[in-house]
Amino acid sequence: MSTTECRLRRWHPEDAAVLYAAVQDEEIARQLPPLETDPTPARTPHH
Image (cartoon, rainbow, N blue to C red; front, side, top):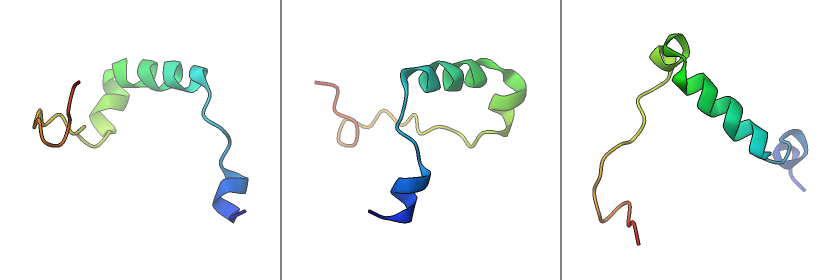
């Protein structure tokens, strides 16, 4: 088991809620790097 696996805890559903709420906050969203929203079918298949 690597040290990274030891330090990182498992992803919890509430983490998504916190992250979502943070992204809705303009102050925080301003500081985040731009999300990849490139709708290229080759890279992001939606089926």
